[in-house]
Amino acid sequence: MVDSGRKIPRTMSTQHPDNARVPEWCSLRDVIQGDDEIYEAYYAYSILGCEEVMWDSEGKDVDIRVVRKLLEKYGEFFREKVIGEDVFLTYRVPNPRVEEAEKKILVETLTNIIVGYDVASAFYGRSVTPTFEVILPFTTEARELIWLRNYYEKAIAGVEKLSLDGSVKVRDWLGEFRPKSIEVIPLIEEWNGLANIDRIIGDYIEDAKLSYLRVFIARSDPALNYGMIPAVALAKIALSKLKKIQEEKGLPIYPIIGCGTMPFRGHLSPDNLENFLEEYRGIYTVTIQSALKYDYDPDTVRIAVEQINNELPRGEAEDIDPDEERILIQAIARLRNGYQKVIEKMAPLINSVAKYIPPRRARKLHIGLFGYSRSIGRISLPRAIPFAGALYSIGIPPEFIGLKSLNDLSEQELEILEKIYRNLWKDLDKAAVYVSWQNLDVLRDALDKAAERTGMSREELKTVLDEIIVDLEYAEENLGIRLGPRNLSHLKYENMANNFLISYLEGEDELAREYLLETAKLRRCIG
Image 1 (cartoon, rainbow, N blue to C red):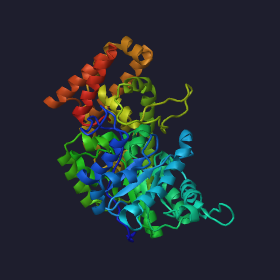
Image 2 (image 1 turned 45 degrees about the vertical axis):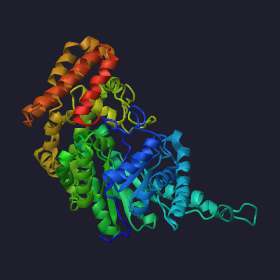
Image 3 (image 1 turned 135 degrees about the vertical axis):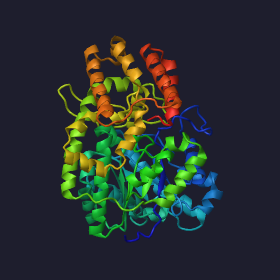
C-alpha cells in the first residue's frame, strides 16, 4: 500500500448510547451529556488509550467548543499528545439530504472546525489543525461527498476571500480561515450502498484530489434493517470491493467499522477480540462504543484497546470474486426477506418494550433506514440499540429472527456464506444463552394481556410467536445450537428477563424498568 503520510487511528471512541452502567464521573444520574462528554473524550484518550474520538453532531446536541474546553481543562495531556497529530477529533455531521431538521447544524459544525484551528494554534504556538475530517452518514452517492467538501471550501473557508466594502476582504478583518479543505469520510449504511461501494468511492476518487480515503462501514443499522447475517456479508463485500479499488487507483483506503459488543451489532468485546480481528480482516479502525467503555472494568478495556491499536489491520480483506458475490447476494436477500417478514409483525411488541430502555445520551429522533412499503403502510422501529435491547430483554435475541430462512439456501450458497462469515456459528452460540423459552411460554399463556400491552390482536401476536419459535427450533434441531441458560449466571439472567416480562405484562412500569436494566448489566450492554 502507498503510505498516506499521516497516522491512521485504530480505535475511535464514540457516543453510541449502548452502555448499561453509567460511569461514576457522570454528573447526572443516568445520562451523559454536556461537559461530561468533554471529560469522556479526555478519558478515552488518556485512560483507555483510544486514538480518535468521534464528536457526534448528528441526531444530538453537542458542545461546539470541544477543542477549546479540552485544551483549557487538560492542557498538560494535550501538550504531550497533539490533537490532530497524535490523537484525533472527528465530527459526524448531519446529512442534509436525509435529516431535514438538522441541516443548519451542519453549518455550525463546519464553522467550528476553523475556530478549533485558531484555538489549537494559539495553544501550541504553531499551526495545528485539530479537526480535518468529517463523517457523513447515510452516504449513497459520490456527489454528496463532493457537495460537502466543496461547501466547506467555498462557503466556510472560502468566506475569507469575500470583500466587505470593495477594498477590505474578510481575511483582512478576521484573519485566515484554516484548514482550507477537509477530508470527508463516507458512512455507508444501506444495502445498495454497501453492495455497490466501489461505484460510490470510485466516482468520488475521480472527482476529488485525494492522498488517501477513510471509508466507514456501518454494522448496526444494516443488522437492524436486514438481519445479522446479511449485515456481516454486506460488510465483507464492501471490504473486498474497497481492496480492489485501492489496487486499481493506487490510493490508500482505510476502512472503519462501527461495532457494538453483542453479535447482532458486531461482537467487538474483550472476550471475543481474537475472533473479531480475524472476522474483519482489512479493517483499519474500529469504534469503541459506550458499552465496551463502561460495562467492563477499565483495565480490561485498556488491554483490549492496546491490542487493537497494535494489531490492526489484521491482514487484508478477503477477495470475493464476482460469481461468489452474485451467489452471496442471492443468499442474503432470502435471509433479509425472512427476517423482515418477522420483524414487520413484531414491530408493535418491540416498540412497546423499547419504551423501557433507559436513555444514556440526550439524543433526538433518528431517521432509520428500516421501513418498506406494505399494504398496511410503513412501519417504524427504534434505533438499533434499543431495538436489540428490547429483544434481548424478553428472551428473543435478534440474532435468531428469520434464521429458518437458512433452510432455503442451496448447498453452494450456504458453503459461500460459511466461508465469508467465519464466526457465524460462534456468534449464534454466544447469543443462544439469552434465549428464554420460559418467556415465550409466558407470552403464549398470556396472549390477551400481551396483546393489550402491545396494541396487537391476539391472533397477530400468536402468529408472530409461532414464527419465532420455528426460528429457534430450527437453530436447535438443524444447526445443533443449544438455546437457553447453561450455567448459574445464565439462569440468573433468565430470571431477571422473566421478572421483566411479568412486570411489563402487569403494567408495573417501575419494576419493569429495574429488571430490564438488570438484564442489560448482566449481558454488559443495552443492545
